[in-house]
Length: 455
Image (cartoon, rainbow, N blue to C red; front, top):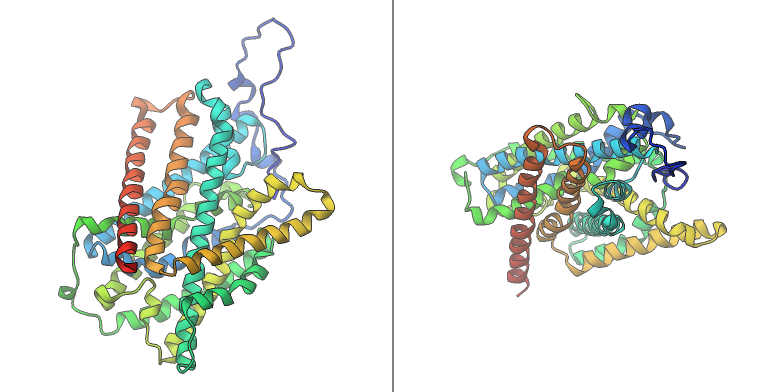
């Protein structure tokens, strides 16, 4: 991936004389005079369809099958409303992040910027009082990205391990392993897959994962839609004190913002990413509909007995159900690699200059191996799928997907205009309050449940 941030600078031009030409910095670096798309040189560009599959896969991981458990915390009516709300907010935050990144690219005259580069440049060329914090903001974004990577992929490890345990326990009931042991068995296969370093080469895996997830979805629907319980057996609305776990789970499920900038930066036609219909809007509408369907009917079928993944509720002694468990484990396995791509690229960009060129390949292997090992260790430490999803969603996914884009857009627009009646400021203030609600209430609810369960 080539972000061109080292060779192209967006520092102001030096003054050649004291004569003023009445040309402002904004005029010199007008976004209208520099189109970043015309200057992007990507070694392995991704097609629009391939980008759609990548973005869809990043939002359709294990979270899709966790939605029935999320509906358990709200009931049917608040669950449907909440799914739509989270979908709209998540889409909007991705939109403002990408739009801001494109505008700052035009201002700085660079072809593309990563997630963390965007955060840094916005503060570096924002209000004067905030410019000194540009490096701090970059580090914060990096840490948030690392948290999403480690927390999210640790959930994936537990998800795969739980599915494998169900499958193997059926075929060999006399000798079983724990979920923690299956997490350990996954270490080598995950390390091998994560060595793929170009997003273009992940397109076949992303397509395969989407097919497996689609077939799993179909099989799950076959079981879910048969012999549905009466609506009177489930709650239309639960106590609001249980809603925070729904919000954090839904945000975990829908947020794929750590993959957004690499996908957009490596598109052959990046102008197809935003707009209507656009890759982003089409993907998120499909995602929201799928989440609502799985959540509603999964909760109707299994009620309060629904597990962290609805596939765990499927029968263990039927071939069709076992097939679904194999395919969903395969889908999440390939999703793991896609979710690890962006953080690995960011970390490698920051450390590669500290070692000699001939050691770059070895350095990449070591970095990716250690990162995978850390996610497996975290999965072994907290092997509870539902609660870990809620905790990771509340802390890391909400920070990366809600808080940072909100702050970045506000800072970027501060001197450039906040719109009529400063609507951008009011809108982002409401979004910030929503983020704080998810963060505080989601963490409290998840930690409380963890303490209760393990004590």
